[in-house]
Amino acid sequence: MAADDVLIITGASTGIGAATARAAGRAGYRVVLAARSADKLAALAEELGGPGRARAVPTDVTSWEENEALVQAAVDAFGRVDAIFANAGFGASRGWLEETPEHWRDMVLTNVLGAAYTVRAAIPALKESRGHVFLTSSVAGRRPLPGSLYSATKHAVHAMGEAIRADLADTGIRTTIIAPGMVETPFFSSKPRFEALQAEDVAAAVMYAISQPRRVDVNEILVRPTAQGT
Image 1 (tube, helix red, strand yellow):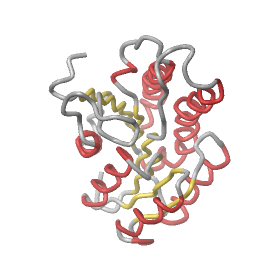
Image 2 (image 1 turned 45 degrees about the vertical axis):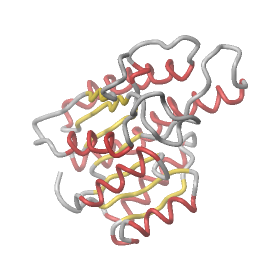
Image 3 (image 1 turned 90 degrees about the vertical axis):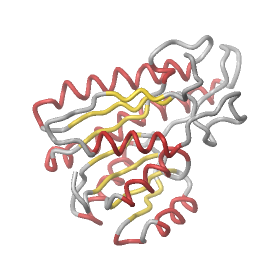
Image 4 (image 1 turned 180 degrees about the horizontal axis):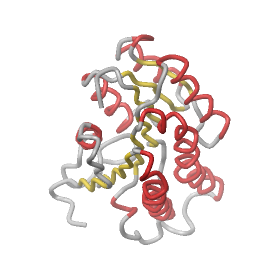
């Protein structure tokens, strides 16, 4: 990718999304920031250079129309879309009798359908730029965790990434699944027992994949803290 290329990030107001926006901004990308938190998005967009470099687009990724509007806002602002990072998501306590059914529903819609909607909305623009799709999965998407519906949603994201990659292989679009282990972000209500990854570590993985020559598609990056055994 080249300087001034355009990267859309969902779940951009905190954590991995915000760290990736900052890393991309430092590398010369223009960024379009999406999340439901309008105030946090606006502050981050201003930090990253304001309207000429970063745009805040409050978005609920479970809405198809809002995903369409997000991509259109990027095209209207910067004329193109070179990469999309479907990063929005949240978790739930383990245990099949934990959380409410409503929490489960919102999580599945955000983590799975939201990611699918975001990528679908961006594909026409990405075909024009021969761009790059990123999806945030998890170590939990590679092995089932006891009592974890969240884990099941991330297995779905892994499968989605491979399905997208195979579907778009002849278009020049690259697809990368980012699968972090424990990350110290607002996602977790308590600190892990060992030194976790920082959001910036995961952002660095995104920037590694996006910086490869166009002939190289890094299909998956699994990144765990040194002390995380499983």
